[in-house]
Image 1 (cartoon, helix red, strand yellow):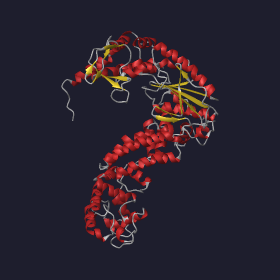
Image 2: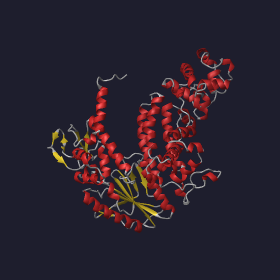
Image 3: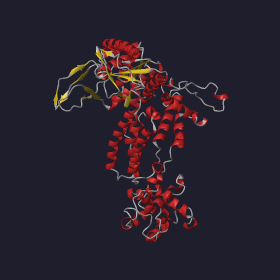
Length: 611
């Protein structure tokens, strides 16, 4: 329990009063800062090329910045000052939204028998390129004035920096450009500074922080390249005016087409030809010229395999911990922008991702090879990758539908059914007029149909209730009871529950045993025989029945054999919270029985004696 600090209430109220009135100040109080110069070149020692200045601000400064940030952001959004083409550092926008728009734009052009061409621009040391004097002028132009402007001017002015290498410090030099990285205000001031970069452009510009993308569609590369080249000339003029440096060498040119495209008509930027590539990683997703997603899936597999190898080293941790580790480190990699590419994946690609989840599931449960994928996912309460794609995609589509995103992405929705109240289907959206197969297999055409088929009541829920109730439809229930017990006891009970264990009846189906028989000469060593009949474990069984006689809902002799086995492995009324403590004691007794028999920790001798 946290004890209150003497005077803390007065102190917190005073801070609120001070920071809420911060716009009345004309300058930011001087506070010590820690400045770090981080080498952005991964070449190791002696390979310093370009660095990034990171500023570590004191806690109170960050609180004050948060208040100022909130005020300025509110002003920018209420007056629609920030372009809808910018997706970074703004509420209700994300990389997924921007990538969805880009992919939808490309596939729409394909459906019209056109191609698309994209130019991915790279700004050199973007956050350090913000010219203070010009930024203040831009703040004035959006009606930031008076004490508020003086406060921001004080925030930017009188900054110095020095470099430290091997304990040796350089002399301090004044900093007249750049916004502090590691701060709340820095990113917001940056996106405001480059906000007008898209003015009077002919192509479709998309911005995410300093990642600027130009997209043009047309019948051929001559048409698209001429559009983008004219825009690049305008951006060159803009960059010179506002002292922003672009790195033409790191910028990329890419043509999106289902067929082989013409390699002529290059893009020229700052008197240099931009490199044309067939693949490019943009906002964490690997795009290829045909949008096949094979390359991106391969990258995910490599990334996940590295993380699974680390989880494998700690596989002796309990099931609940491994479950959390999987969701934090593995599923998060798969989930990133999954609605962007997931609906377009074929069965082979989905199965590759499913195999990654299956590996993680076996580590968490210690399940044997050849265990049913569906059974082990159900036991853990994990949905398959196919269901995961549906769940995340429907949630994002619903968020777009209820205007929980910024306006740009909503333009991609299919046309609304104007006669929905006069038809039996009661569908809110019509289908697109474009009938191209590739287009129909993408997010908006595919997920809008799934969303239309949801119950009417569910489609009218707010975001929180929609996620909850959709989870009930698509996800298997999470049964807390199945994480009870020691690692070994839990794992062997799980093996019996999913039907793949060291029992010969199970091993025989996996071709790991020459017989289904038990050592007691029973022809089939099934789960039911092992738990209820085999005389080799009679002493342990009597102890088990004695310990659970007061835990079960009725006397043991009142159960039929199937129901008793089900109760021992799955619990009774496992979704009933009132029965949780009873089932917990039941599971501990069952696991104690399984451990004492020593049957499930080694292979039967019959495997080695019978030919």
